[in-house]
Length: 139
Image (spheres, rainbow, N blue to C red):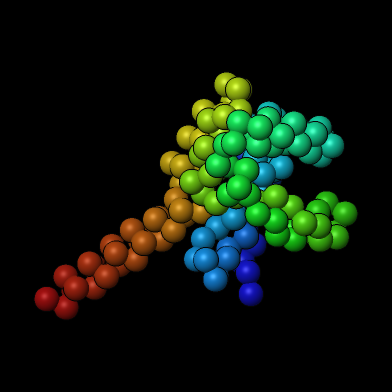
């Protein structure tokens, strides 16, 4: 079973799905495009990604070949095939989009305690502190 996570960047949701088989998170491209461009209109995000994808395909950019599709639940409650990319490719996509918000999004995505990895690191640090404290108590 795949885990689904939703993170919010400036009130824009970014959906992610955990893939047990490949041991990685996949992130919705349309959500990333919408978050970076601060656009809530699904059609505009879809058209922007369609244009960008065609442009990248023409340039033979590897980001397009790294894109796969997974079924994600949309706002209407139905599941649709959605382009998704891995964490490394999220960083590549953010660097390709010519927008000042891309840098802020990338900072949030890679360094924030609210990111998937940031929350995992916080849990690990807390667990380590508890274990260290327990060892000191037993010593």
